[in-house]
Length: 531
Ligand code: B12
Ligand code: SF4
Image (cartoon, rainbow, N blue to C red; front, side, top):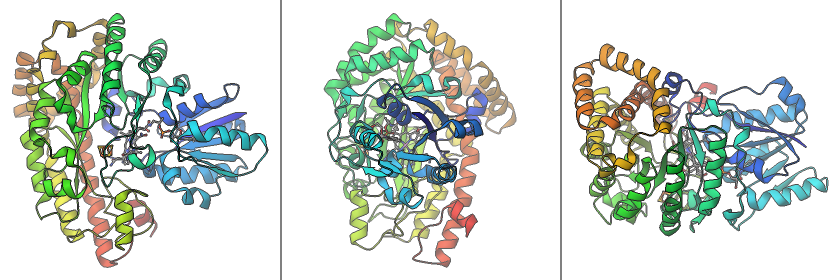
């Protein structure tokens, strides 16, 4: 079988970082790990071609070659996803779809006549799909309530990727999260019992990437990397000597729950393996909102203390914040901005709450008759898809204003500087074991050109130049090994400066449209253009 794997295009977003990617000569941030995992699960005598539409077009030759077209993606990719299914069907191809978008909203894919809906986790649903193909069944929906044991998942087919196109690589150690946040669809899609691979299995994946020549950053895309702390410590203990033997060829980033702060041993193991950053779902400093959204793990210790402990351990923090929880008092965005400033978190993903399909939040709002439409388009440029408890206009205006202030270039630069000064105090940054290695030096050399651009734009062209140079000098004096990484972070403002304009324009346009036609589903920018 000749299978063409297509990964649809993402809209411009908080995460798309086009300007930064352009500077570093890459085309996308992360690869489609789901599709290359699927390719490894499918029979290995099949032939595969992968087209990630974020880096390349599907050519006529690809379409002609394909016998089966397979697509994966998340809800934000829906527009291009549906277009590609239509295109494949028009060309008379059989189409199989899977991943978080088809799993959450299968009716969308049925409406465009996708032939096979291979939903939930592929380890469970690909075998019955293959049996159906064998029997010559023309269509089918394959689902599984049971979650697979991922110790059996094969090494993803990294060889199908154009490695040069990506700024980071993706691997996954665990799926699922033990917590119960009301808005979260992770626990719906991947369950509450964190399932891990074995340490040897993950190291085999890294070994494969090493053989293929990868020498940059790797993002562990786990829903919550520390969901099973015992297993993750076992992994890190085995990983560290493997990395040391190869001169630390990679750096790592991941996502974790905030209780990471309570486990110093775990943080030390992470930094010993060159974990440089961690994404935390902090959501809001408002304790009443955290209680309402069933996130007590963020209240047990003061959030700002947890952030301080994680930073003091040497892990750069990226964090997610949300506005629009039920019962929220006016001024929520202000409180978030203050918190971000006070804790000096440079990269803060700020969004308005959205109800994702099948989450506890979705079911509650449905019962209360507050959902606007049957979809969700979670993004930083979309209005909420339900009726909030305070006026939507108030939430949206606070949100736009907060986003604007977070990404005011001077505010961002100040936070980045303060954050790196704190990181510089961490013992791991002074540990001799962490001196630069050949792998690290190669990574640093690759960043020379973008660094030149940042020095020019932020040190000469922009108003921030008056603080840029003193900060850089002090960084050099107090945290010299953090300088390259600090400047790379500074580059993000190139993206956020443009993106905050988009957020403002899109939210204001949607708000005006919604206020003119109350009770309608929120309009995305595309639907606005079409309407
Ligand atoms: C890495 C990641 C990203 C990366 C993107 C990487 C990339 N190029 O794909 C970044 C950081 C950019 C990102 C951004 C966002 N993300 Co994201 N992301 C993830 C994450 C953590 C890992 C994805 C991954 O690699 N998984 C590993 C693979 C192995 O799992 P998988 O894709 O599910 O594949 C399995 C099955 O689904 C199935 N399968 C998958 N595809 C196919 C295809 C076929 C044909 C078949 C048969 C089977 C099949 O088989 C695979 C093996 O079991 C997931 C969570 C998760 N656990 O997956 C969220 C997740 C996909 N993201 C999500 C969301 C909401 C977002 C954001 C909207 C967040 C935000 N507020 O901004 C943004 C969107 C960007 C934008 N605004 O444009 C949601 C999607 C919900 C949905 N139902 O669509 C998820 C599920 C998590 C969550 N709730 O936050 N994300
Ligand atoms: S901690 Fe994160 S992944 Fe876990 S349930 Fe809450 S939002 Fe979802």
